[in-house]
Image (tube, rainbow over all chains, first blue to last red; front, top):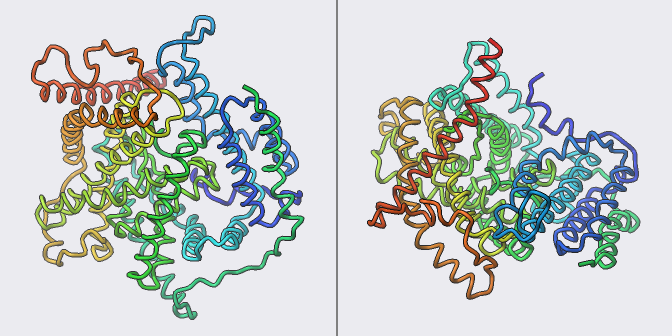
Length: 257
Length: 330
């Protein structure tokens, strides 16, 4: 298997039948957005509120049956930003905090905390969504939330053909590697770039063929949305909004400076 | 430092996140409306597969000038291949999907991430592309060269947009000068890689399907057939020279405008930093070289030295351990 497979959507979804899995997608998307907004709007000094958010995130992830290694593995995407955040206390003006041998700025420490806390919580919330919602359901949810049909259609096509294009790419790369091509310097980039150019031409031609096939089946410019999943009830919406509501409670209770 | 790109939640303050989100939505809405009018019904499938292509292309790691691996960002490439409006939409969709489904970039950071990675590179890259096209002959080589330069510039423009947002919504009191210097400096290097690969990709598409390249739509077949073959080595050397020139020019800019911007920020009560930087005494402090009277020359030397220094340090960091590993394993 190609190393690229790990990135595509095949492995994003974690099978399960938990309450989180069963929620209708549009409510889940709205709940995610509400939770992330509450987190982002919380002043950085309300430390207790963030502790509350973390407990809520852990609670939802546990309810969804997501294991700790999976969450941590997917959270690695934000590591570069955490590293940057750790540098902030040293570049934020004169040292005002003394932590043993290290001199750093108090303001910078708060900024670092702000980024670490909000980035981790935001990423964790997204990870719970993708792990419990198959891509077609995400698309249904987006279109029910009135995201323009053109955009949802483009995203749908993107996911439909992503794996094919990735496979195309990995075949080309394997063929180049088999011919001892292993670029190490910028001036050895020619074949890599040429393969990307060929990939674009192939992709575009695939798009043209798809379009002709669609026209042959009666496509006239607007996407029919397959809307098979059930419609959300009030209960769905209340459960989906619970994390955000709990977060708001935690924010009012945790206003500690 | 790909930091300016794919920023997570909490990186810039909520007002800037909100304002950039509204701005991004307005621009993309305009682009969507006008491009779905001018395109035929092919736009949905073609944009969809193009988004998948950008997604896939971003995962191809290639060695950049500093010896580290980088990857294509594709804003300018998408604009040159698909036109600026469709290019911006396609890359914005990739950025949004990465945030929503791959936890790569924060949902509340989508506004400024979309502006810095999709809107500014696509529209700015397209404008630069059209500008450079006038300087080059109307041939395949001309299109390739203009694409290469424009995509390098587009990355730097994205980094500058980020610095500007930092000025108004920094989540930490790091001085604007420091952020501008670091982010733009590093993105000049990233721009070399981006320009190199974009030029070569456009050249490859021009050989197989010149008709699909939006940036070459106004060239006739005989013009497209003309032009010399340019090797990757020529590209790399030219790219480095261009980057040095850009660094020298930008260092002039960084001495003047940011001060002005900072003054604006201070009078508006937005700037939170007034303390001198810890490195204020260094010989390149404030992007000028001490001991050189001519301001222009001294700024240029500081800018070029900065770029070379970053290049050398980057190369050392990336190359040292690999050579060491190669020696110990063989």
